Length: 153
Image (cartoon, rainbow, N blue to C red; front, top):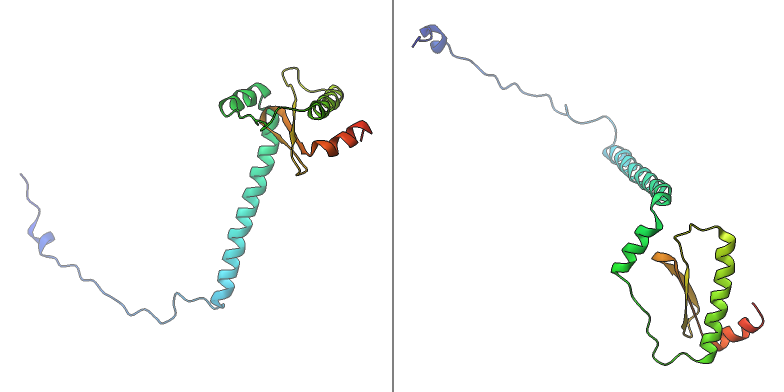
């Protein structure tokens, strides 16, 4: 096995540790200005990311088929159970809401596989909301709705 020449091992490498001038890593501007610029940059990036994600979601949601939404809600299907039997007033309001929904759906030109279901919840709180699978919930007190229903709102 060849050996290295003796001169390469006997030579010493000398290292220096020079004195660094004071303030070499300090900027000439106030540190809070640097912090403010950094914070504005980070916040601006976050806002831009949120805007891009929101726009992307709004654009891409059009391509999700209704059948996928229907299958998704099937896993979590919930029902609103009434504490008492539906009254005649309740059924009248429900029929009116269904007929109103049918007229709106006919005018909206919805996809063939989409069916809109309306549910009436008899409660003193006025509210309305939609869920996945095109389920619409109308929450109102039935006696109030009957007056409105009979006058056709």
